[in-house]
Amino acid sequence: MFCAQPVLSKRNKADALVIPFYSVNGVTKCAAALDDSLQEVVAPALKAGFLAKRSDVHLVYASGQKEVKIFFLGLGDEAELSKDKLLETYSSLTKVLRKNACAIVNIILPTVSSLRTISCDDFIESACEGILSLNYLLPQYGEIVKKADPLIEKVCLVGVVANVAKPIYEKAEAVFDGVYLTRDLVNGNADDVTPEYLANTAKGLGKVIPGLQVSVLDRAAILKEGMGLFAAVAKGASVDPRLIIIKYEGKPSSKDCTVLVGKGVTFDSGGLDLKPGKAMLTMKEDMAGAATVLGIVSVVASLALPLNVTAVIPATENSIGSKAYKMGDVYISMSGLSVEIGSTDAEGRLILADAITYAQKKLKPTRIIDFATLTGAMVVSLGEKVSGFFCNNDILAEKLAIASEKTSESIWRMPLVNGYNQAISSDIADMKNIGNNRAGAITAALFLQRFVGEKVDWAHFDIAGTAYREKEEEFTPKYASGFGVRLLVSYLESLIS
Image 1 (cartoon, rainbow, N blue to C red):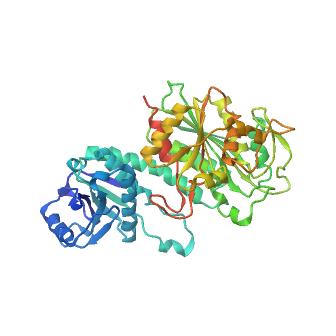
Image 2: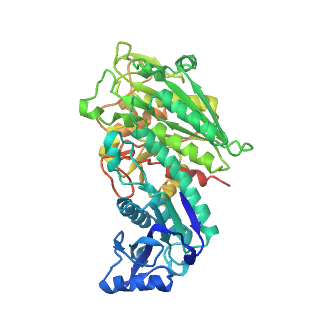
Image 3: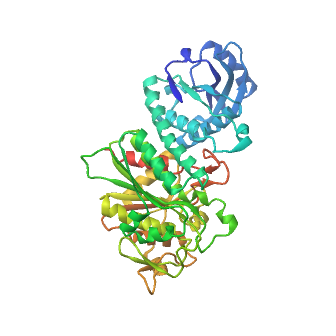
């Protein structure tokens, strides 16, 4: 919970106070206006040589203050202040505050006159996002819960005009509610986060967030729609599939509509092409695309953005069993195109293909943007810090890149190499669902592109590397990252006119 605090003299009683410092030509300076009592606290530390290196945090205890602990936060070189560096700096601060069990914190922000390389609004936004990014508790079970660092419960932004800070932190809080939702869903047990659970989560959002309309198709309805690829993947699962549609009409008078499609494989065994045991260890994350679009649409509706956005989520397990779909068989998609199954472990593109077709037949999209933990090839190509994306429209790609820079969620445009289409050709069907062992992320994208109409702008995010982290890094926690929520919200805001 955040609260705006308009002037320094009225800061609330708290567990901690944070004072910002930066260096100018090698000299450490306080970036904020301080009263005399705080000047007396700061002077000894500066005399002792606090260097204000970026993300350095120095703790002092001072009597007579409203806070028990006072932290000096290093912002680094004043000439190098930037949004991404501030995001990382304030996320580092969150880790220190949590380790020191600081539940209520006053954070002094720099004076406007001290910010020469970044605007006041951008500074506040980055500070808020940095604090929120790691103020997250991983779902834990049993006695280990007692060992977790407690969350920061309340932050007061001090030293800025309240009407400037208030909308910025309220927006950041709404965005991170979506990020946390995405993380919680991905981090949850696969036995709990089933297709039905995702559907119920969507229905729950529809009850508490104005403007969300939720509908759900069960197995019978999926078959009735002719979604042969989606139904095939779901055949071997002990849990029933769901197609989840979440519609938000923030601008009913406009025909412009963005459809977000998220891969919702709630656990991926690989099917009859069974994965090695260790490769299955993190396969509860294979619904991260679904969790991402749930997070995005919840933020868009919470902020009441004047946009039309619909999320389409094909949700199923990919399991082994007597009814599981088989390699070498051919299935007919909702579009009418036939697909030969080269691998049952290339299931994500199958359910996405039918969802993309459903979106075009039922929802009249201006653009379709899909998210999927689709290929190991993307992880090999770009690792865990950069998401690859494919796009059939240069303007859309450019706007996504701008949103990436603004949010520090790194993406890289990958090529749709038409010559690689040969790798997914079939002698008995319109295509196969997998190519050879080369350019796997590209051939997967080319497969999806065959289901996208010529007049629809389309982007495909392969988040296999970025959705789930093996360790905490920079402003991203261990395990589910929530990658893509902030980026897409920023992109969607660019469409507002």
